[in-house]
Length: 83
Image (tube, rainbow, N blue to C red; front, side):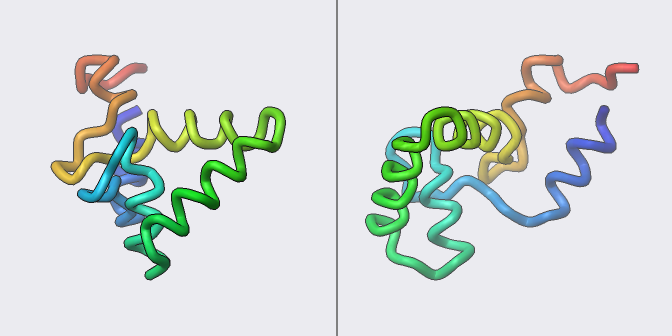
């Protein structure tokens, strides 16, 4: 399981330091170069899609590393390997 978390970290996507809720829109804005408020509107608009918008946000929220490289799902497991 740790190899999964390590591969997620290697992608380089992090939650943005300019965050309101989970930092996902801030991180996406930083990667794409789009204004953070426009990205927040896009993320909110995606919530209008029944399961896809909110579901994708929740998956991104539990798998996206914070600025310090900690991943919420890994913290739930105590940072140890699950095999």
